[in-house]
Structure formats: C-alpha cells, structure tokens
Image (cartoon, rainbow, N blue to C red; front, side):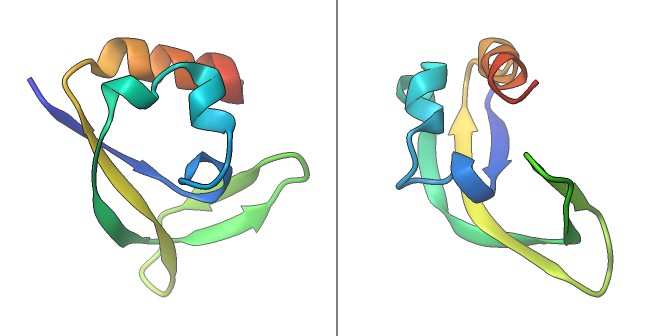
Length: 78
C-alpha cells in the first residue's frame, strides 16, 4: 500500500537529513506543494500546526514502506 509523506524545512531536498535517516531510496518524489497551517519556532525544531489562514510549503513523496520510513524519521527528529 502506498502512502504519501509531506516534508517541510530541513527534510526537503537540498538538505542532508533524509539521506542520514537512510530513507531516500524508499521515497518517490511527487512534487512541491503546500498544506494549510502555520509554522512556529520552538528552538531546535519548528512546529507545524493546522490553520486555515496560512500555508506551509514543502515536498510530497510517496512510499510503499511507511512503517520503516516513519520509524527512521522518528529516530532522526525525536
């Protein structure tokens, strides 16, 4: 079963975090896009909160291995 994953910030292409998580080979790039929400600065990591008035720009990927991808992201992001 294929699952979509939306990345923003340092998980987007051009940064090294996804490669370090070992998940790049499990992702298929679908394109750029946005979700309704706002970003908040929490220091080390930003927080994305759903909201009607804002847009968070990022990249959409597809994976057929959501469990290991999400586990690797949890280990990387904490």
